Every structure is written in structure tokens, then in C-alpha cells.
Length: 418
Ligand SMILES: Cc1cc2nc3c(=O)[nH]c(=O)nc-3n(C[C@H](O)[C@H](O)[C@H](O)COP(=O)(O)OP(=O)(O)OC[C@H]3O[C@@H](n4cnc5c(N)ncnc54)[C@H](O)[C@@H]3O)c2cc1C
Image (cartoon, rainbow, N blue to C red):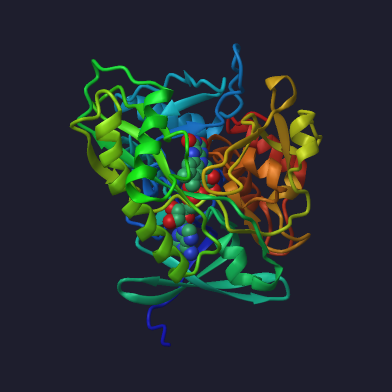
């Protein structure tokens, strides 16, 4: 293996361009750090664009009087979307949760603008394939882009990969499995908005699918469909699959199985659901939505007790206001509710896989038990933990991690809600 290019140097290297990576990159850049933002795909947005998850959760608490719990970089992203004509009014769901609908194309454009304006160096089509570790610190990243291999050297690094992939490249022996079902999202167009449909119609479509194929649809309720008010389309989560790990063989099997189900199930939707007779599968994914297959313990994991008691902590660096939404296996969704439909603090230690290294965790890669993971993983909270990780990385010296109070004060100065 030969590396022919000279290394790219940065103060902070952020791996992953999703909500957490955007939070980290903009948070660190606002502290004056030179930031490299590394993303495997050709656009930013993470699961919202890569896997077509068209809603931000976690900006607001649940219930009749929702409170905004994420601002800072997350708020700037909402404002950038608004400037492109996108409506960012929160919408209440039947669960009592509040979501903000997304248009992936406007989101990509909004994030491009923010990253460039902040002076962040974006590296797209670039995948981190190895990390060189010495005495608990990461010396360099080995990256692959279509031109070949090159190294990135940074004082501090942020794992914003969504599944702790950078931690796994660095310390495979410290990784623990986390089982969460994966979902292939879809956008269906050509719907008749004049036709109303309900839960019974969707259940009938799932039963029709089972009768035709001999296999039950994992989402026996027929799936989750959200009309997109700016088009005749809807965003659909109807295909769940179990994903044991992220080897390319497992991923290939899961992607192909999920696509086959999506195409087959469309026929049942057309037959059974009013307004779907002319439905078209406009897009799947593009990629399978992976909730988690692995995680790494941190110095201060978010835990079920924090969530059910809406705990405040003096070392809090972000608020999490989404309930614990768990997908333990395909077709199963369970909730753990936050006391009083309130929010709980994510602690500074959740960003740190060890006491004095130079790797920071962000977004759905932070330390959390399975129940709290169901809350902190959503994209609203990922902006907040990402911003905290980016600020902490930028304020840290090459020898030690930044003091908590300095990180908290800087986050407040940047408009974050602690
Ligand atoms: C099917 C599904 C439905 C969901 N529904 C919702 C919802 O409605 N609302 C909500 O808010 N949340 C939802 N979530 C959860 C949420 O999308 C994720 O938990 C969240 O996106 C995590 O943000 P992140 O920035 O940490 O990671 P991600 O959004 O996953 O972004 C990680 C980025 O890192 C990149 N990357 C990974 N490894 C590498 C590497 N080695 N080199 C370079 N780049 C790399 C990836 O390409 C990706 O762009 C859902 C998740 C799934 C899977």
C-alpha cells in the first residue's frame, strides 16, 4: 500500500458529515480552529440525505407545550433551510412527538453554504479506512478518495460517523455490539392527495403482501407514511431488516433484501390504499438507514436513569428531549418516556472514550446505554453533542482535554442550550 500525497494537516479532523459532524465542524471553526470535515459520500447531511430520513427529531420536547431544547449550530441549519424557502415549523405526531420535515436537496444546499462560510475544509468522497494509534492517542488517519490514499494529521479528532466507526478502526477490541433494526426509507410519488387513508388500509396492504409473497412484512402495521406538503409525495418507512454487523457482505444482503421488499410491497400499497393506485417508488434510501450495530463505552454514558428522571447534571453539555425510541428488531418500536415530557442532560464524559486521549465522540456515536441511545441518537440532539465535541476538541491542547467550564461557556456564547 503506498501513500504518495503529502498529508493534510488540521487542528481538528471531523469524520462524518451528518448532523453531529456539522455541529462539530462549525463549533470548532467558530473557536478559530482549522477544521477538516471528512465525508464518505459526495454531499453532507448524514442519515438525512444518505438514508433519506426526512425529519429532524429532538429539537423540541414532547407534549402539548413543546420546548425547544436544541439551538446553536442546529438553529443555524434551520435558519439556512428557511432562507431557501423551506418551512421549519414543527409538526406534532400521533405519539405526541414533534418533528421538522426535511427536503434532502435543500438540506444539502443549506449545509454546503454553512460549511463554506465557516471556512471548514470539506473532503467529500473521502473515507477514513484506518487510524494510527500510539499510547491512547490517534496520530494520523489513513483516508481513501478516488485519487488514492493520503493521511490526515490532526491534534484532535471527532468521531461523527453515526456508528462509532472511527473508534472501531482505532480500538476494535473495545467495541461492543448494539442491535438495532435497520430501515430502508422510500419516497413515494404520484399519490392522490384528495384520497384519505388510515391505519386499517395500511394493515390491509401488509396482509396483502404476506398473502402474495408468503412472508410477513416486518412492519405488520403497514409502515409509517408522512405526506410531504411541498409535493405529491410521501416519505415512507415501511421496510425494516435485521443487520447483524456492518461488513460489506451483511450490508449487501440487507440492502438487496430491503429493495426487493420495497418493490414488492409497492404492489400491495397500490391495491389496498386509497390514493396509492398510481404510486411510484421515486427513490429508496439512497442507502439503508443504519441505527447502530456497535458502540464504545465512554467516561460518562447517557443512561436510562437520566432519561426516565429527566436528570440535570452540572457537567451537562447538551439537552436531549426525544424519548428513548428503540428498534430492538425488525418491525418492533418501543418507547421509554422522559419524566414530564421534559429533557435530560448529556454529560461531558459521554463525548470521551477515555480520560486523556484525543478522540471525541459525537451524535449517535457518544457513550450511551441502549435506552438512552434511543433518545440521544436523533438528529436534533446530534447537532448539540456534535457542537460540544467540536468546541471541546478545538479548546483542547495537544496534551490534554479542555476543562468543562471553558467548553460550557463557549457553547453558551455560541448560542447552544445547556
Ligand atoms: C431508518 C432511520 C430512521 C430514523 N429516523 C429519524 C428521524 O425521523 N429523525 C431523527 O432526527 N433521527 C432519526 N434517526 C436517527 C438519526 O438519523 C441518526 O441517529 C443520526 O443521523 C445520527 O447523526 P450523526 O451525525 O451522528 O450520524 P449520521 O447521520 O449517520 O452521519 C454519519 C456520516 O458519517 C459518514 N461516515 C461514516 N463512516 C465514515 C468513514 N469511515 N469515513 C468518512 N465518512 C464516514 C457517513 O457517510 C455519514 O454521512 C433515524 C435513523 C434511522 C437509521
